[in-house]
Image (cartoon, rainbow, N blue to C red; front, side, top):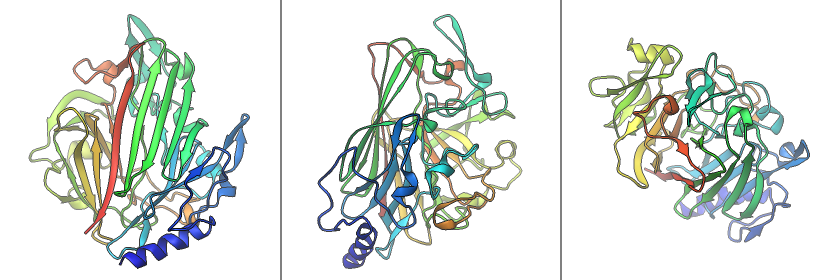
Length: 384
């Protein structure tokens, strides 16, 4: 089995002129992107407003990830399946142009300055009312019309297994107060985990809620469904929503509802029931209130019965947004010329709660000067 995995890895890295036994010890910001299967580095090389965009490859000798500094996006992530073959479990587009198309869905991106929704794009901080860009009907979603997902991040350092990216958001950017200096570090660890560490500082009080918006299918990107995936979420409650998917402020117990994933359950088992909350979200698009203590802890597990790939999610965050791909519909320009279909991916976004700036009972997302925003999430892969 091990030899088979190594052959798969060698096939991927060979395109880059790399060796599975001797991956590069160091790359620099000038290193050209490396093609992985259907993704060509040439299709990710560009200048946007004078800033260079490229594709970067990380490997731990077993798994392989590609990340672009446009939106700090995870483009692909190959991990071993039950046969030790490498499977790309992250959905994405074939080139940079597709990631820049309107309404592309935030595929693989770091979203911010505030991930998830803020009601009417408004919040009050230190007695001052702030109006954000509206890009989700009457609400703000994932930072606005030109959030972190659409920025070129500066590459601060890159090695064979890690990539450090930085973006400085100016005071007033999209309506947010304060100059925010944000750093995200991706690390592909020896135990086949994609470790994401987030850091931010500000020069005046602001709100921050960063997360990664990867779309996963553990049967392989391009597979037709995620409804057969078995999901466990360590949460006794979730934040119920109104008709615009803004939390009502109520934390609803999951017991005796389709939102109870405390025991392993197929995603599709109850998704089409007439539960009022599922009808509002057209499926799952809700924040789960995690049952955990402070620190990095296991909060969710997903498994594909087809590939045997298991993903464990560990986080320091108090919430987890579960989205079941309800608004996916004939997604074009996908990797390898594929078209992504309805509910062919899920997102599990670690976060603070949606609309927390307007809900004083929710965990605070306020960042003060001289304080540092620090949080960490790990997507760890194994196989049954």
